Image (tube, rainbow, N blue to C red):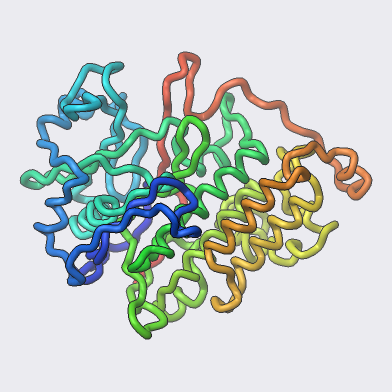
Length: 411
């Protein structure tokens, strides 16, 4: 939910209309094709009226959401982004009516800022896709509000906030994300992308980054913010021609150069995030020394070397992984970051690789002795872990959602 755009995009109905509804009940359906539920709809672009009539979404009144968020009180703000502010609220689990704080279910309400980067078209694209798509690794859209000038979206609440906060925030109450959790998040996010790419009409996410990956209480990853999503190519077309939009540092080089969008563009972005998980560094960080501002450019030479890989691994992960596991993840990231899109794996292949890695004994065992024998000159001290998580205060109360970080691309 971070700041994704430099300018508002223009999205025609043909760009916001998924032609089928896709519902998956588990994270493996897109790969196995066994239990996905598919309901056909007319193979024509959907109008705004059709999008808003989705039976899966509740249409909230503005007053209902004012009550649910206690009149959008400042202390209810979870985060801010290009769309506007995200507020914490409460609704009844069955009737979806506003309830008192602490009762019913917790929701996240995203309110459009009329002066922000995003507008009605992006808002409608989000309603369109999340009103039709359902998967364990996509954030659930409960409903929306379209009333006068007001544009709001109502989501399930994700108590641990964004992956971005867990990787990059520094402070007294921040605990480093462990290797096992990083791999769990990577697998969950990969399943979300694989589901989108494996649908009958492919959906290209186009803005995959750490701030758009939200975590529930069990660190299950869910993709959020579908304002830039696009239907993939159909028929014999190899790509979709579109304006270059997204976040600098994550966008695939061929997409930036030509505006040609494919599912492999998302694979590249996944490779960048996988590299961030390995290194604990941002995709773009101007505060780093010269030559290290761009994570991909800096890290690529180290990724295929068993010994040199220690130059890029997050020191906070010391002793939590085996050399072979780290090397396999690094090799997977390198494949995803191939300069030529045709050499990148599909997201289904990425999911398989990560599942195999998690299923192996070596991926979870403590490999400190093995690592020390290989890394006598590269040892480092493990920072003391903090007691509380970024998204929990001393009372266990959820704290913040993502805020803007990376620079936007432009047309």
